[in-house]
Each structure stands twice: as C-alpha cells, then as structure tokens.
Length: 140
Length: 500
Ligand SMILES: Nc1ncnc2c1ncn2[C@@H]1O[C@H](COP(=O)(O)OP(=O)(O)OP(=O)(O)O)[C@@H](O)[C@H]1O
Ligand SMILES: [Mg+2]
Image (tube, rainbow over all chains, first blue to last red; front, side):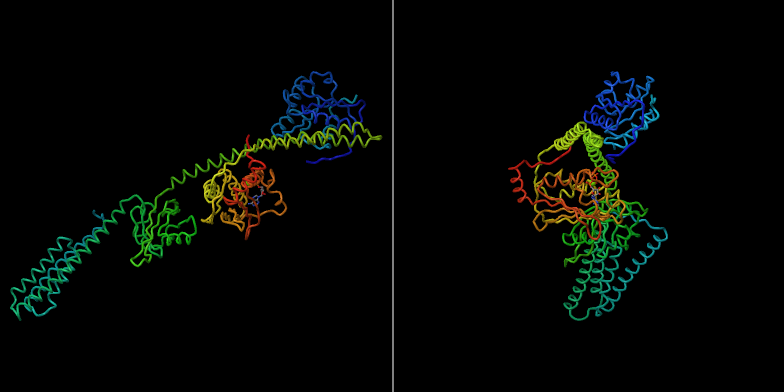
C-alpha cells in the first residue's frame, strides 16, 4: 500500500463548491473520509447507509458519491445501479475492505469510476474524485 | 507328487534310448561279475562289480526295486560260492563271501537313503511351485539358485532364465532403505521383511511385501537367502489413493479455516487503518492552512487515536478467536509420531519425486504430548521441506530422531532445497509471513506454538551441504512433567487451535 501523506493536489476551480456524499456503515471511515474531503475544500455529507442517503434531500444536489461496497442492507454497488436505473446517475467511487476481482469488474462495467480497496492512499481517492468531478458535473 | 516336466519329442526319445542302454549295461555287468566270480573265486575284485551294479541300478530303480536288485546281487554271490570249486577252508570262503555281501548291502542301503532324501527335496520344490507366492533362493553373491513357478508368473522370467542371474540386476529392485542397512539386519536377526518395488520383464513395476530368511550351514556360515514375495501393488494403490484423499482433505480444511480467518482479520484491520490514513491526511491539511484550523485538526487526531485503539482491539479479539484448549498429554514415543507423519506425507513425497531417508534412534526416552498436535507440527515441517525442494534437485528429505546435550528428544527435518533466505529468516516464524504464491504463512507459526506448548523449542538452521534444517526439541518425559507443574501454577498449559 502506498500512503501519500501531504500530497498537494490542485483543487478544481468550480463556481460552486461541489457536494460529495460519503456512504459507509463504519463510522470512523465515514467521518475521516468526510474530513479528508472537506480538508481539500469540497463540501461533504456523510450517511450511515444507502437507504439514509436515498431518503435525504441531498440526493438531487450530490456531484459525486463515495460508497462502501459491503454494508448491511443495500450495498454501494446496488446503490449505484439503482440510481443509474432511475436515470439519476451520480459519478461513483466504491471503497471496500473486501477487494474482490469479480465485484471490481462488475462495478467498472456498471460505470463506477473507481474501485478502491481500504485502506486507500489519499492521492488515489482525491485523484478519482477530481476525475469524477471533471467530466461528470455541470460547472454551474 | 509328480513333477510335470514338458519336453520336446526328440529329447524324450533320446532320453529313452539311453535309459534302455543303461539297463542293458547294468545287467551285462552283473552277468560278467557272476561268471568271473564263479570261475575265479580267489579274485576279490570281481564281486565288487556288484557294487557298481547297485550304483548304476540306482539311476533307474527306486525303493523296493532297488532292494530287489541288491538282493539279486547277493543271490548271485551265494550261487557263485555254491557252484564254484572250493578253495581253502570253508570258514575262510564263508567269511570272504559275507564281507562282500555286507559291502553290497551297505551300498544299497546308502543309495536308498540318498534316494529318499532326494525325493523329499523334489517334493518340497513341487510344493513351492504350488503356492501363489513367489519364492526364490539366492546365494550370498545374490545369484539366483532357485526360482519357483510363482516367481516366473509374477516377474515374467522362467526359472531357466532367472537362475544364475544377479537378483537386483534382473529385477531392478528399489529398496525402502539402503541395502547395506537391510543386509545388516538380515545378518544380525537372520530375517528381514519390508516392502520392495521390483521391475517385471515387461518393464512394469510391482510392489511386494517381501520376507527374507538367511539360511546357514552347520557351521553357522550364511549360505543363501530364501525370499518370498507377495504382490501388494493393488493394495498400495488403494492405500495411496486414500492417503492422497486424506491429505487433500486436511489441507483444504486447513486452508479454508485459515482463509476465512485471514479475510476477517484483513477486514477488521483495514477499516481502522483506512480511517487512520484518511484522518492523518485530513489533519495535516488542516494544519497546513493559513491560518491552521486547529479545531478540525484536533478532531481528526481524536479519530486517529480512537482507530489506533480499535485496531489494537481487533488484534486482541483475534487472540480470543484463537481458542485456547488444553493439550491432551499422553506418553509417546517420538518415533511413532515420525512414522505417522511419514505415512501421511508419503504420497506427497512420492508425487514430488523426493527421496526420503530416516535415521531414527531406537533408544529414546518417551515424551509427554498430544499425538495429533505433534503430528501436525512435524507435518508442517515436512510439507515445507517438500515445497522448498520443488525446483531443486536432488530432492533429499532426511528425518532423524535423537537426543541433544540437554537430554531433550529431538526430531530434525533436513532438506536439500535452496536453504533459508538470510533476508527473511528472522520472520519465517511470524504468522502470515510467506514467500509462496499460495502460502498462508501459518505453517511454522502453528508448529512453533504447538512445540512451545509442549515445553519444547523449534529452531531453524542451514543444512550441510545445502538446504535447511528444522529441529523440534522436546523435553524427555521426566523433565517435562516438572515443566507442566511449573506452568500450571501460573496458567494452564494452553495451545492455540483454529476454529472457523
Ligand atoms: N524448508 C525450508 N526451506 C526454505 N525456506 C523455508 C523452509 N520452510 C519454510 N521456509 C520459509 O518460511 C516461510 C514460512 O513458512 P510457513 O510454513 O510458516 O508458511 P508457508 O509454507 O509459506 O505457508 P503455509 O501456511 O501453507 O505453511 C516460507 O514461505 C518460506 O519462505
Ligand atoms: Mg508451510
């Protein structure tokens, strides 16, 4: 594992602050991921389950989704597929503590931008994030 | 009992002719002796021709018939005495005649005896031909001197072809131990049994259960070796298949338990690690701001602290997961454990074409231990040795048992693999350290836990001239009883075992 601490990344200059949703049932991972994203200047919201996220009023204004694959109830991949099926595709980054090649292939085929095993390097997450925001959001 | 002999027709007629000639010649000599003795009773040599008659008759007359021949000779002798002109005093002539008669009678008696002995031998040989077992005899130079029908059927060589050949040239014998060791046992005990692999005439191999008995002459000097063999190829094949299945089953069971364990450990550890890495990255950024956002940074540091502790808890839970169960201590002979493990690993050894040698001391004191766990410990070492030699020929696996200076009972597994890598040797006993693509890295760590729970020590060192050597030293029974008593004061003697 490569851990790039303190890597400097250019923050995309957006007219409004992009909103990133973090969905993970593990509180520590959820809160620190949110903290990391906020520390580079995005605004972030954290949710403990896919169901919570779907029920929230943030759904419509989320620019990028970071979701855990293995969660009780709906998985991060299910969430992505469900949104895509409803025509509300949000650029998605999946994170997982159980990396699995079969699931990775399924995810990438379903249009998921990145599939990151935990623990992931900060640079990897932010790189994915930038790529996802770069061509997925309206820069309003 | 009749010996079935098959002969070609010309050979049979030739044999018949010479038999008839022999009979005519014998009769002629008898007649000549009678005439000469009658004409010249003084000459002592003529009656001795009757001895020749008896000896010749022994070639075609047996038992009762030979008695008739000898009686006939005696009758002719008496007749000559009666009809020939008397010379000298009657007593002299009678004495002379009875001496001659005795000589003929004694000759006939000896011939009869030797005939019955030969018949006994023939009957024995015929009996040996009847058994299903293969039996052959070889002299002290390993040259075959007798070969029964069973041997001919099993190995494909007839008695004519086999007799006179050197056994292990003919059969390309594969021995379970060095031949010198086998011969040493044969000479000291007078017998040996074990399993051999022979090559038949058609090139296929046959596994046999072999028994050797050393034959000695009256002075006690060894003269020959009687060898009987039973074909156990089928049995071996079934045994091997069973062992293979068992070993595979055990391996699968171990791998899946460990695999599940590893996956759950990875998950449990990776969650807090991910949080720590994220939190540290975020914390640094908040500190790097102008001005630094200390509040945000503090929040992240608090998280890191919490997740550091959480990871430590995971490790604690793994320890608890590794259930502690008391060792079942029995009185064991370490060599029995070694033999158990050899039986378990045999198919693995053969499949990898490694040569196994053992040197087991036979005067070792017993130890106290859990047989199954010690088997598992030793099996891990043997499996590692076999795996280490996979790409290194020659593949020589040696398992020895003995005593060390401290009077511990020691089992050592020597291999001829690449040896211990100085870069990693310090870590090989750690859990999950492996250099193998499909390794779990648990073999040595389990082995060490088991050995230490027995009050013993596991160590690794280079082998001479190459390879690695792993040694299990276990305290002998008495010393170990003290060790158990010592530890029981502090804590019960415990041993990890994995449950899914
Ligand atoms: N006989 C040996 N010769 C050389 N290296 C060895 C030998 N035995 C063990 N090692 C080294 O020690 C490492 C750890 O061995 P260990 O038995 O603990 O795990 P493993 O064999 O890799 O996996 P497994 O859990 O399947 O046994 C091996 O990967 C290997 O690098
Ligand atoms: Mg191993």
